[in-house]
Length: 63
Image 1 (cartoon, rainbow, N blue to C red):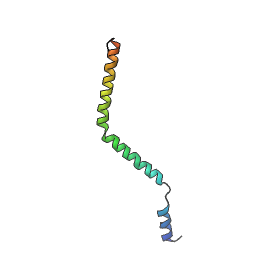
Image 2: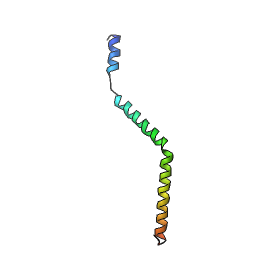
Image 3: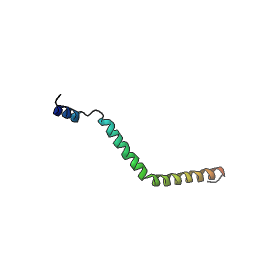
Image 4: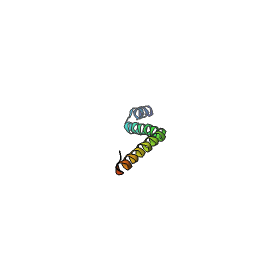
């Protein structure tokens, strides 16, 4: 095999391409999750606090 043919075949070979794409997509999702972690955490704390308040109110007989 000629060197030019080898490199052309290597360039045209797209096996493993989907793995690379999945890694890149996962990286983007992780970066977004890290970026909005604080906002998500505040929202969850608020929801859990409201749930706790609702449960406490229901257990004490009030609404």
